[in-house]
Length: 293
Ligand code: GLU
Image (cartoon, rainbow, N blue to C red; front, side, top):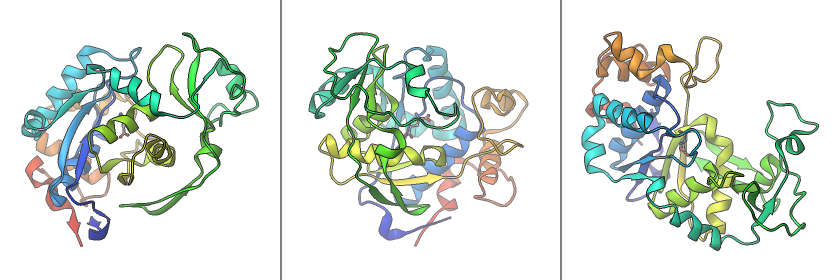
């Protein structure tokens, strides 16, 4: 795969940032192939960031398994050497960032309020109902930050020019949930900024988050935004993205079936079109899948 040389930041820093809410599967392996492959091709540092902001779904055994699977796949050196971070190590950084956001307000809309008149599958833009109600924050309410209707434009390293209007997609962004958890959108922006991540590599399922994350970053004083590279996903037979319940393609299952790490990396690379058919690939060969030109 060709990466446009002009699009790669100088002194690139990227990250592998799994949510600690389940076991890794073939989709995560493909993601690791992109992260470490591109990192090697462009000389980027990789941070392994354990995203445990969803405290209701976090389980310590997932974290242990993720690190063990990464080591087995051949990324141990990087995990050992690189900056390994965990969101729960310091929730104070999110508190501090929240204080830098302008006009944050409390919202007591229920899921039913938010979903009224909308199809369950579509993203429901928040109406702004609580924007001027002056509610006092208390557990059980969300924190939101107002978004204006500005358009965000960026050039994705793999997908080219993109234009998004976050206010139309999601409305005022939730930064903290009703149980006090930091939202994915907020935590990821704070982390990418404080860790100096200037090259975000992730699946195409997160493309629609990027405009809002660039906007949030600007509100927090970040300039310029990171470069984003959204890669294809591993799909199941019906064309859907894999999820954590697809046990058959879980790394643990594939390992137990006798697959080697090299076979698994090659299978993942083939499933996302980086190579024509599965062949054994070691983690140190992944940089060869990408050319900067
Ligand atoms: N933790 C997120 C996930 O596993 C990815 C975060 C990101 O790449 O922005 O889906």
